Image 1 (cartoon, rainbow over the protein chains, first blue to last red):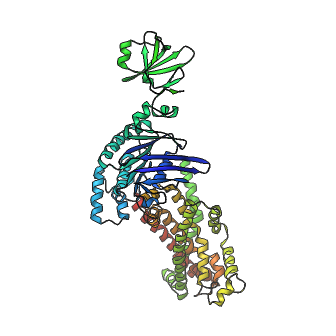
Image 2: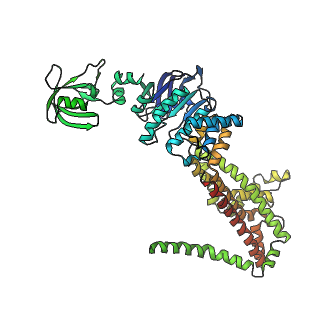
Image 3: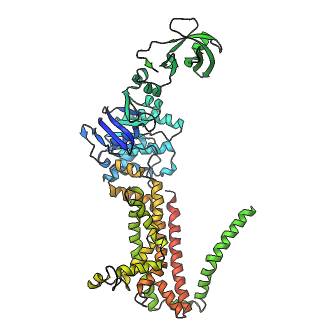
Length: 319
Length: 265
């Protein structure tokens, strides 16, 4: 189901968490709310779920105004950063909770729980308690629990934030595949641009309670609407007073018009990627991202003088 | 190593001197004339009535203080309102005020002649002071803080995320309380109930003031002990003390027996 957020504002005392925020989430899409902590992304997600009430503005789910509806009647699935597992219940009882509340017949609940535990790869864990699961397993249980009631939308608040890097990466890819299988409109909150880029179809960048930009991952990366978005969604380096992606700078061995002269200070090998740190004449320093192949072809060495040519940039962002 | 042993010795010595020896002497004295004499002393009609009355105190005060204790704890932890700090401080009042003062305070409210609502109650045929209702009120007053104090830290620790998760899954307020909150705080509640029970069993001062100490009518087990002691019936006094002590031990033991089974959950 689609979600429409219409001019929503929310304050906590003097702190403005959301300032007149509007956005559309298409039915069946996978959207990331991306931004630094305190930017308002979790608050926005909680407003959509009904866990926070906005000071002004509306939330429409599937075209209906859901603003006055309490969370228990919104039929949204919500996944918390710290899992919010029901510690006194087994995994099966956790997943069955929403169906038990809805007083579904026992055999229907059992069948559904079995199916969901298979979906999240937790079959065989039905009779364990949450304390006997790893963080990643707990989060998958929480996801199965949220999906059990066939929610109209699925909302995830920093779902992988409490997990270690390897599990995080696994679960990211897995969430992506799960969405292709289940097709429920999904919105997740993250402060990790790589996570947002990898998983989402649409990214909403939030900062200081404002929407900075909404677009596809590629759109945001290639056409950031301002410096904040540019810096937040990818690496940047500064060249002659302009922000530029460090791989959009070409290293030349001969001088050329509009290509400033620079000296290579350091060459850092990061596997396939190579980071070249340079200093320009007037105390300015910058860095360029290149590949091992390029480096070998140009036979670059530390201390060498080169010229830097910014590649064609459709909409330059001034620093 | 040596200092650890010293620490252990100090702790054990302290407990033995202060608790162990006196309680052991009560047991020894209760049976100085034999088990038969002790048994006879606690099965007289007065003694039986006294234990029955203590049972009533516990049976009324513990459930009521448990229910309202949990509600108070919820209000203090989960809500923001004016006077929350005052409510929080008031809960500790029974710890701070001497039970005798509690008894006198109850006389000022319910006393037949000069009590605040005593006259009105008397006209309507309700006797509070020198009867069971007053003694129950006194017991409730002194045993009120335990459930609240045990439940508050547990409520703080569990936070509200599980409750919010339950709400998004379609659970209403009451359902969430009984299915999520209550199971999560059950050990806090259980420990509070045990302490409330122990306090209600042992209450003396406040009940003493409002009871009138009518043997066989308004005499609880603790008052019975005092009464026997003052009449130089040492066997009766110590034997009844032993029964009270055993009841308190049983309460503590009961909790320790049920606790480990579910601790893993």
